[in-house]
Length: 454
Image 1 (spheres, rainbow, N blue to C red):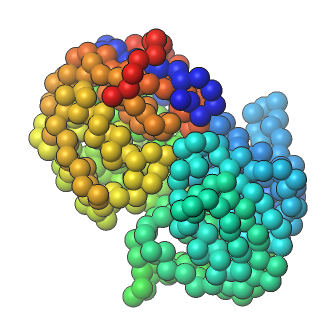
Image 2 (image 1 turned 90 degrees about the vertical axis):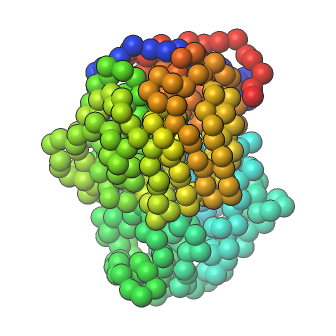
């Protein structure tokens, strides 16, 4: 069922061309970080373009619980009056992070080096996801975490009364783990060092520098070494959040699948640590163009134009690219179903511990739609059916996962028969306007009566 109530099935019907401008939401990763760093600054941070999905709203509520003043102005801009590094107050209630793994892990890091205690929970999906990958490095600072078996929520974190700086090599590529350690390092004396063998999205490093933290990034024999000097006084900023490339992926890939489509996504982020999907799409033969490149809020952006690409070809996605497109693999798998030939996605075991086991969920849904698939612990292989070659006609279980839901709704627009998702409710966590936006572009979406999922 939906994260916040009764399941809301939704059906995507084979559609005519998608045309127009896709005003996709602000970047979710940057929105979370802007709220948290604004709360750790002294003074007023102003944020425009903030994603107002449930995940980010839950992070805003958490920052209020830790003592920051967070408001939304009549003009749509958000103001955060921060309490400074080390200034978090102990919350008087449980912090509910809803469906957001990014939110809960970053917030745990931000409070772990203050002498306060906080209890975290979330929806059914989030409470199944392991937190040990974050709580283990936070323990090195002196924090203690007490949760359910397997390191799962609900979980109480007792912050370090006398934190120490750490040197931590991230064992698997994870921007969430890296960011949690860096946020914890803000209130530890001395230098905290994080080492990545594979680069992950670098929004935290960019924003920390923008807020005035002393931080340096070096490439060495160990990999990418990030050194943060603790206990700075962060200065409030004006943050312009670019449009989310992960959200843009859905209308873009839908346009690539549906004959006659052409749409524009203005001001989408072109951060090089987030462009793996678009590199892959180019290799598949997608008709994409990036126009008017510029910088907004410290991030490179451009206007993206996508046109129907009927001759897409299957490709092999190298493991080294996985970190730069980890959230886009579900929609890539849906698109690969409409390509000619085989698409192999390797190095993707991180997908098994997202909002759902995304490898298993995509494999089951694609098979139900008539697409041959195979999986291993660390890979997903899709045998493309060609343009307009996907049978469809299935009801797919989304497992409370917004990206699974959106991926199969996009596929349904290009399949021969409608595709239904058992619950579209979780889409609101990241892309509240998804359904209305696609409808404005020409998609045929309609609510259905509940059906048994596959």
